[in-house]
Image (tube, rainbow, N blue to C red; front, side, top):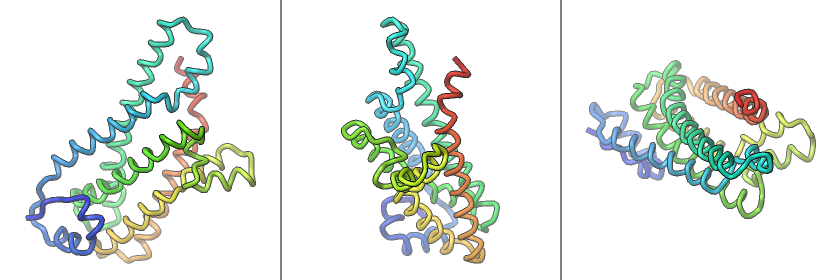
Length: 222
């Protein structure tokens, strides 16, 4: 029997991975799923409440009366809640499924891996808040990313978004996933490296595409 403790699983990785690998039963998973869901929703609601990401609404504020503006803000908040749910499900279940395809590790144990990944991603988003509120710095040119360096070499938005998605937090996640899978899986280490890097390249490309086309999509559905 192994009771999942995400903090100890991260700071005392080897000991807890050994215990997790030998465990026949795992408990505390559902409790942590609900806690993480609450943290994800709270983080995105907080960001929406502070007005982060409302550029498209604010830009046309003079075209709306007070009721229309507040109505659009309400829809924006609902949209952020929906995005938080998709983000939560994708990070935990879709990413776990991808790693399950080429590793001989149970799907449930891979979800536990992604729980720690989700915590790191939420921490990254919390660092965006003071940067955007007090310094006016968007996430893709955060000092923790390669986006700010890329912006000195090119004006191509997609490339800036792509390298802006590569952050210190993302590199920590890759390191953690590789260490975790190497300990838990019998898959050759080279294939684990290739799989993790390939998956993150897809995620960074997808993030860049969503950021590049977000305003276009917004006006398309209006």
